[in-house]
Amino acid sequence: MTDPQAPLPLPGTMPGRLPEGAAPPADFTPVEVAKNLLRSIRAGTLATLDRHTGHPFASLVNVATDLDGAPFILTSQLSTHTANLETDGRASLLLAAVGKGDPLAHPRLTVLGTMERSATPRLRRRFLARHPKSALYVDFADFAFWRLGVVSAHLNGGFARAADLAAADILTDLAGADELVATEEDAIAHMNADHAEAVRLYATRLAGEEEGAWRVTGVDPEGLDLSSGDRTARIAFPTRVTGAGPLRAVLKALADRARAG
Image 1: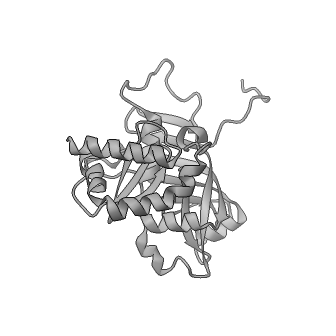
Image 2: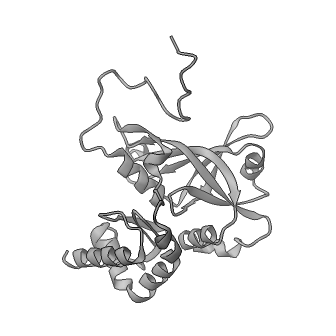
């Protein structure tokens, strides 16, 4: 019997649905997989609540992430999902990896929370770094950024690889990282202008990606975001970084490791 005093489960979670005694595979690292999906997927399915009937309304949107990993979108007031969000901000984003074979064999992450309109230069910069063609319309009067206040997430990493996650599991803690936040833009510009070869090696030798015009698109305490055209890569730092000095040190160490093969 359900305890009426018990707190409600987080949205999207599946308490009590796993077989009794079931254990996930030993090599399944749900937090790592979820964070990689969150930081690397460029487009996803946005689900909003229809403002007329409450039906789920799904649409395709381009996605970027803020420094803490919170996903955000750029959308027009003419879009149905924008009208829905203006009435009820509750929403979810499905971020799915793609590849050969059965689509359901690849990992996907559903992130749930409440969307709020946001306007900061950092969001604009980070979105354009991930989606440069958006420069054609980003400053149109009817366009705005909407940021998801993450409450929970559900990861499906393939057969027998599922996990319920809280916001703290997938977001990056920015406590004590004010210096890094303040220097992020300059650090990105410096890496792209003066260390393009190192960036290429990060992508090809550390992330296993193919050759391309790789660029840094974001830096946060836990890692580095890269892109080349419509391809993305995520390089996780071996230790948490909160300032400019430690950032330089970890980037040099990663470059040395990449050059060593």
